[in-house]
Length: 154
Image 1 (tube, rainbow, N blue to C red):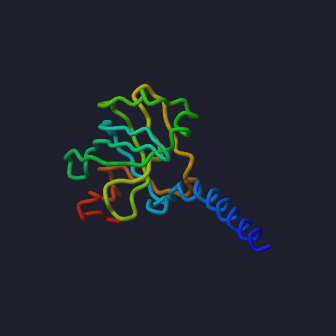
Image 2: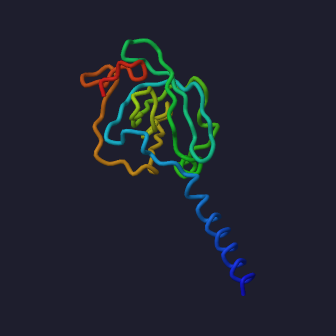
Image 3: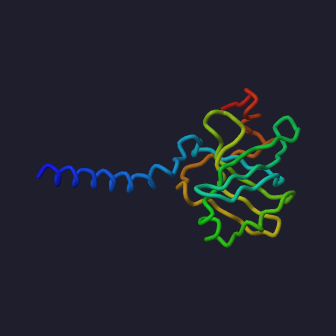
């Protein structure tokens, strides 16, 4: 009886760990201010197509007028593919319009909300469940300022 109970407990622990692993692998959007969005024209510097989320490095014009690199978390490859995108659609040097939810820490970065490519196709992030946003356009009235340099207004 004791061996049977130990075996049952052991298999139950293995099963529970196996079911919990996929849930812990997906990170939350808690590090981003989902109530705000920032928009800017950007140039693609790097695109990392990978799971669980792709990453994009873009060059934008900072609030001070100088070029700044920004790293943004993007959707999973599955979400990109569902909207018709492939890795070859993202070429270094491509110009695009990008909108993102900024990092809560004030660092220059965040999570992509949308990307509009030169050919007019638009990717819209649907995994984060965005609601109730306030939009900022870099350089426009209400601009949150130069994030990441300790000068952020938010």
